[in-house]
Length: 333
Image 1 (cartoon, rainbow, N blue to C red):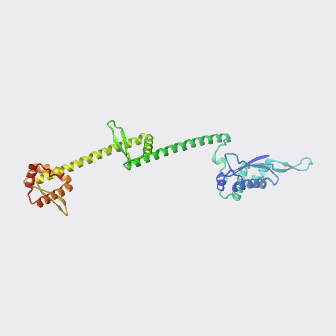
Image 2 (image 1 turned 135 degrees about the horizontal axis):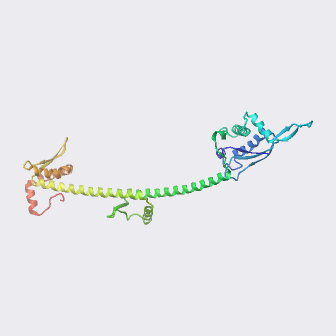
Image 3 (image 1 turned 90 degrees about the vertical axis):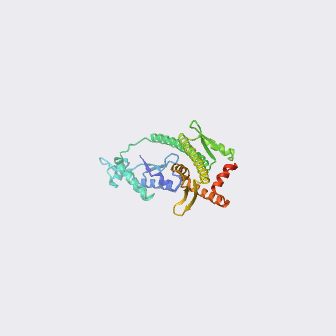
């Protein structure tokens, strides 16, 4: 008896259902056509049994048990008799398919049959002489696949953990963008997070939990960001202070007639007019303070000038009154 295995790609079976389900149309077609092929190649009565495994990890496999028959010539006057001959059956298939290697011829035959009657996309696999692949026992292959399955499960779990950590990090950063969380750079280089009291206790707890999962790289990014924010706030405060100083200096210079006015020209924008009585040194000091903030100081001086004209007094009189009365008529007015 010859034990043959008719195999097709399980992906084809999976297109119409579970590749291990006997009621899957493609699985039924495989089982029927595998038997029909064996009977066509080795004789109608040669097929003893056929078996489809549906409880294994694989799919697309049919076991065929075949007893090919052939007439054996009788010797010394004896009549030829019908005998079981696996060798003759294999040679007949090889001759029919034009292939001297009988086992390869059987694979060619089954490949053509499956392609024509089950799915035209099926193609016979490449012979071993071309692929140089070595046979590996099924138990060894199964053990390796089980290892791969365990490794895949571990990788899936790890990917899930990483995705969850990334989600929590993004959620925390989103609250930072909403200004619900701020950072403070401590003297020891560490950063402290400050949360708005308007956040619910549950939300605050979620953010604290997310912060515990931060990687060192995330903390380094937050530390660098906090440093830049601190520097920006300090620079903003310095710019604010410098602007106030420029406005105060501009007002004082106008009252003392060191600056005699300001106007806006269509082509050049705002311009501050300095008194011709100023020394070069004094003008340089005033310019260094006022000119960087000319877009703010010049309109301010122009507004003071209009106010003084409306009072029908001179700037010198305003300056004298400011010095004597104790009132503050500067920008804080």
